[in-house]
Amino acid sequence: MKVQVARIGKPHGIKGEVTVQLYTDSPEARMAKGAEFVLEPPHPLAPHGTVTISSARWNKSIMVLGFREVRTRNDAEALREHRLVLDTDTEEDSTESYYEHELEGLDVYVVSSPDETELTEPVGTVAGLQTMPTQDLLTVTLHDGTEALIPFVEEIVPDVDLEQGFVVLCPPPGLLTVNSDDEDDEAAQ
Image (tube, rainbow, N blue to C red; front, side, top):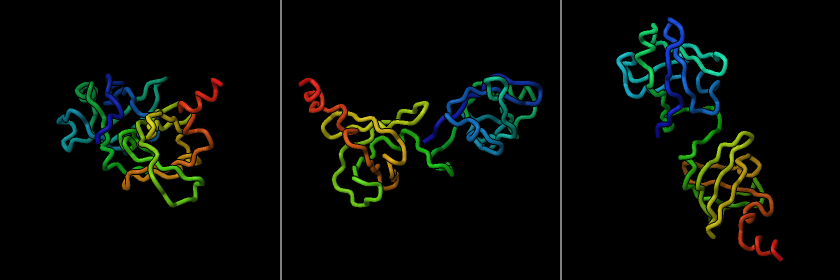
């Protein structure tokens, strides 16, 4: 699946640099020198359909990028409104990170300890991923129809297997039942 990482804005200076509007939560890692992106829509400046970052820097709160394929202000102007895209199916990433579309629909299993390897019946499926300032949250739809928000940290989510199509949770007591009707009934009494 293709994911848009940035949109090219106006030229910056006379040497072909451009400003970009970012759509990534880790711009320093994504926009590093040597990173290659698919350019959409295609443009003659990128004959192979890709551009390679030659420089990346901040100008106040705006990221400014230079590309190997872009040498002049006129070339930079020609790329205005183009998108920088990553193909997540072929991207090799050294960090363990996931996109929401990769997690949605995965079966969710619960274990009592992170070392446990025997999985029984799934308790639900992943409905989404919420990217939050301090930590991400998995939205899990349980088989009883309730939703649970699960902190996406290794202690609680010890295993994500995209190939086999499942997520393993080791939740603290009460985390999966915090939204259940039984708990609401007990609180009302």
